[in-house]
Length: 630
Image 1 (cartoon, rainbow, N blue to C red):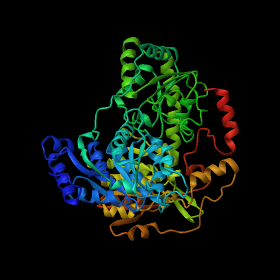
Image 2: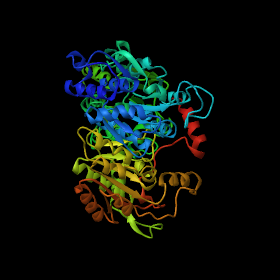
Image 3: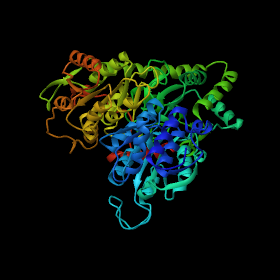
Image 4: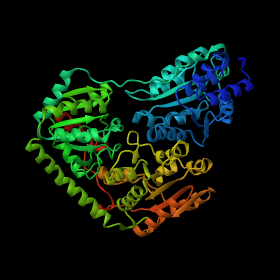
């Protein structure tokens, strides 16, 4: 083969890679010449192929026509797959969920300007939840011949690169040969075993089509095994074991960084330490909800039992968490904690609290090492630790009774709907139980649905629920459904969303049909942003600018997209159960509209059980934080 850079040779290269399986194999067996003339756009596609990135999702524009032409040819030869969607934020959410749920990595691709801005906003989910995603943005030309349309209107270089570097890691391919370094840095960022981040590749429009003559294809970086970091000093482990022996009231709490932790290792650790367990909203199911040590979720929107276990423990063991404000009630949840053990890959997160013994590295490897040490040193669990489990278990039972009281009163009269409708706790529980029966994956949107949702969850395994509590991005759940149309081995997904979140990003109604998505949206409609309304009332006695008076026929809206089925969820448990079954049997995307109660009746919600540094609570919360001194 010659090394020409026209479309015929591009097609031959794509076919050669398809036949060989990988670029490296195609070079080894002589299908492709190692040295060829090639454009930056094609090198970028080949470099991402080397890293296992074969899927692209986004919207093309005048800032990305050259790479679009490369992707057209490679898709026609079945080497890559491109998903052109209707909103760049949706594209970002879908790529994040593909990484989160399926372990596959996609690249989000946009034009210059507003499209890149939207994808950049959506990348907050990637950054907040530690999920590696590639973002490829068109950018202004490097010759500075005059302002490029849609660039940031300011006489300064690399403004998009400066902006994106604040969110993750950013690289501008200002000269063609820099593509190799750009891909190396991208791999160490997106595939990091310490802390995944979004990676932003800025492609100036005049550089995309620039050709590197006699380019060495073997210079493109390839995937490799990145070892996990684990604390080596035995003295640090001795300190940790000493603390575990010292205290009887021990609480272990996990964050999103523990999502890949094997449940068996965690169970063994809890048994060996005599600790109780509280999970963050991102990781339900690591320990079954009905396990005697599992005290459910904790934090500002936690549970009676989860918050009791946090507020009254003496030794707190944090695993894979950033200490986000709602996760630990802005630091005020640890009222009686004397010392902390913090297991994390990130040194800043590991040292978040005072009086901490940090263990830096992969939480699974560290816990396994601790288990080996503890098994040989702890022959029995102290009676005090048994009493601690029983004490926390008392509040776990009260929490279960509290929830059941609301489930058993499923319908309340709502003044907005002017009729009796389902309460959110009851409707959520019915939908959660249905999801478990069908082994469907639950994805929660931000807001009242999210908050009540992770309080209601009773997962028995990890990976049954996904919850963007890192950034609480409204519209995430419905957009994330698209990942199941992109995945190699899709699961049946159900998006739990409110009316406010759904209207932020309803583009899935079109893209679901375009890409043959089979899944479900359950739209819990209380005609308001109830999470903020309730917060305003709790703080100031009145809610403001969090509702509307516009009636929306969501069923008709769904039905207007040919291929989507809209269904009424009714106003009783029986009606909702029938609607769920009908929606599940549908071969495409279905949307169930469920009117839900919003008001002052305490049976209409699951309440809040912790503090939070927000609004007029700030002074009291900050004083308590400083009193605790953690």
